[in-house]
Amino acid sequence: MHTSVPPFALFAMNPVHLPELFPPPLLTRLQQLARVDPTLVAQDFSDPATAEALGRAEVLVTGWGCPHLGAEVLAAAPRLRAVLHAGGSVRHLVGEPFWERGLTLSSAVRANALPVAEYTLAAILLAGKDAFALRERFRAEHVYPAATEYATVGNLGRRVGLIGASRVGRRVLELLRPFELSVSLHDPYVDAAEAAELGAVPLGLDELLRTSDIVSVHAPDTPQTQHMLSRERLALIPDGGVLINTSRGALVDHTALTEELVNGRLSAILDVTDPEPLPADSPLYRLPNVFLTPHIAGSLGNELARLGGTVVTELERLTTGLPPAHPVHRAELAISA
Image 1 (tube, rainbow, N blue to C red):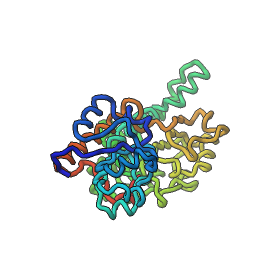
Image 2: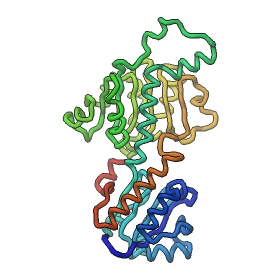
Image 3: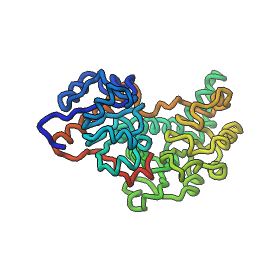
């Protein structure tokens, strides 16, 4: 895509996200690389103004709220060469017509993985100290527990099991290296040698669940992974175990999980649920052994500029004839988020 004339680019997303993803310094850099109008943001390609711009677009800069890039949209974009997505998953965005055109697709999924991994690291370390349960008890009783009640608390040698060597999972493994934890990994696409390089012991899913004090979920939501943590598998987690989910709620049987949490056998740190959000009468809002957050692990606030920065860097590469640093290939979509 190397060209002496800056390519024409079109924003395609919910306009509310544009200033968050591209604050002034990034927008200025983007406008130096491409002919782009920040006042023209496509949410509906049938709108006359955006339809005309789509016909001229060589690059689409997409984000949350972008319409599906199906056959009709692509037919209306004969000059399109690349889609640079300022977000994570692109499975909803493209289909076979996109790949048949041989278009370039890039995603900021690696950038979005960073805050999720940071949230997970914090959750693991606080869970190992039993911080959430002890806080609830301290608020209720206003006294320190006896020293003997801390016998099972601490992160030295704590057994942590990660499900999925996704981009988030791999970053979590990297962040865990300085700590004296016992880390295992289940991922059917990772062999023993690669797991060792990542700093984890490879285990089958059932064995990981049986031998982990803390289980953290980082697998993608695919037909094969839905309810992978079934009633039977949740029952394998040892009494007092903690489940952390920053991936997708559908990977867990939430009816079975709710029962385990209500009876107090397990605890959970949940940034995602199924459904999302939970019904107002869900007991998970009120249980002292559940730490529930409103899907905040991914990029929020000032972290969104990291996603926009990834797009700007990708556009710099494309306009100088380099391939994208973060390409998305059709083959990987079947096993990715």
